[in-house]
Figure (cartoon, rainbow, N blue to C red):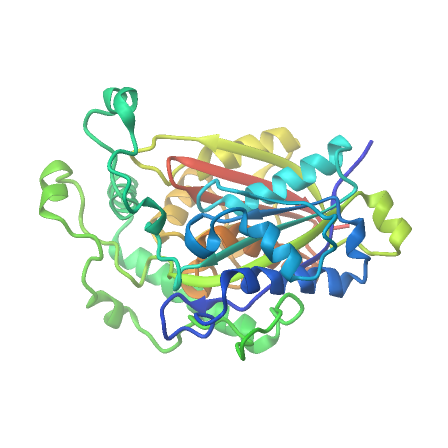
Length: 389
């Protein structure tokens, strides 16, 4: 039976998604090309062996439009014979790229494939691909949801309220994320996965020295009188501090069959064990990580307790803490080197970034199984289980 293994995984340091960020002047094509070039260069394979490149990008407009993955693959020096495509499952786009790549390998459609992700939020701000769209829903969608859905920040507030997660718990979680990321950076835990770019060698958004008192003084990020009237249960506890950052970055993973890895003399980092994707209430939007976790564990025939390490995207602290409440996960195994609150969330790159961080952490800590999951706009979530070989 065919399998799919990861033999290399790299990422750029994550830059701040603003004009003053370290990666702002890097064109998105070059930003993705850097990871594509590094993942092949570090493995030592002939890029002509690559059957496809699958890239995840959310804001597919302007410089990131028109199948940017193809341009990036050519910019990386891949032969013109190597095809490429770009997919969008919102924040899970490059995790979905990993799924498509591995599933293609297992099915026999590919022998060698690169899964990657990109987002330059400083150059293509979130939502810029919606400019000029006067109606995203159509008639039938509005008939099904006549009260309208809400922005992600309001969904995060609703989760905080309905799961009983207070401001202090979220701020404590956020401080811990920065502390873990700072420790991991200091200890060199990211060195094997990082491909420095434009003078940036470490993740730019990690902060140290904040306190609960400092965070308590921050204003709610999404306060609205209209939503207060519609959802009186909201406590307005979501701030910039307990939310993910806006960022620039890219990541790439080289995936192939175990047999091909042996032929090429490559040692796999991990096997792609099981996959799942799930949908949930689009009003709450960010809760599908809960059914996705259960679904992938059921498919794998494993328990959450079997997962030595877990990466769940820290889109908002309330999302991770609600997931933990429902699943009973041991938070000491979750995002052990910090998450998106500290490291950043470059949308389309985040799925591949989490995968890269996870498989390297599994190597460093001798973990057997790792779980990755992340919430996605529209009430979606991907979940993946990796096994260290």
